[in-house]
Image (cartoon, rainbow, N blue to C red):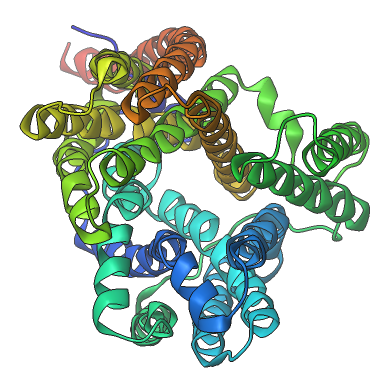
Length: 509
């Protein structure tokens, strides 16, 4: 008989029955649907706005270098608020914080749609980012608490879909809105969704215990929130075309890294830090966290290349480009529920390793892409890449959450989200710079620049195999621990039965 996965081992160590049914109750799926609605709204908004920058510049009469702050301001507020979301959930309850985040995001969306100038739009985008930054980690926290470790994989396979599919379908929705409606509707479209999500959340989301809050670590907030925002800003400037040695890139990056190191040292010295960095003593969580970081760089970084290829090399419209990206979404859509079941059965490390290996294999042919490469062939490759997304990202996150005790989840979810977003920003920045420099020569055909960028993408994907192997190796001791626990439970049950049998035999004699 095969040994149970590490997620089951961690479940046993937390007091869960290792033989508990894996069936997911109806109320868990209902709650999943409610949080998915909020997540879709916040994640889609990012990709929809990205395709509208040129339209916003034309309508508001501002250069693209200034309009870029519509995206940058959102990302900065996102990076600053995510670290605080765990403490807020412990202090006020995950449901209450989630509801407030929905209100902030929806109100910010309405205000953005009504903005008549670029400064007002950027200000309201910051408000949107405060709400949007809390929606994702708090939604994951609620689902981790409701599902429990034993059913984590199956539930997270569904809940993670918005994060994977939004970058693919966002440009299609954004292009359709910009073609038929005023630009303000890229923000107004969030309002009815936000109202419905709030009404359903108020009625259906449970109140959960996220652990003891303790006093707010103000120094930790200042160090980590500022550090995360500085790193995101530096990476966004790098991705926008600035050189790595430019002051506007190097200064915030170095400051952000220094502040993050200072926060880590500070968090190790106090009893109630903003985020508990001691979680990295758990080898499963460490392996899963760095796997998530590497996958963020490999997956989201490469996601910018296909749309740019179709637009710059094949001269496709925004809508057609989005539709040509749809095969990747279809692959992820099919794979994620299956990956959830496989993760529950075999553990996150094995499934993530298979997914990243498939990602590498499907990236290699793209390194030979040309101006006349078959669109049918590219679509088939995108389906395979979608499957690799489903088989890699979610199992790693599931392994991280399943390795935590319930009171640790409010510390784990913000850290996973920060690492994922930083990895994504790094991947996008690296590939954008590589593509820009490869396209610089006058004699270079645009398609050859994408060849170079995909070779880098393959390197990033291959590098993410290393933390996957770390995760797989870290899960193995947990499997042995689970087997020992099961044997002890069986021995205990047997010894408990024996005293009841022996007296009955003695009486009979």
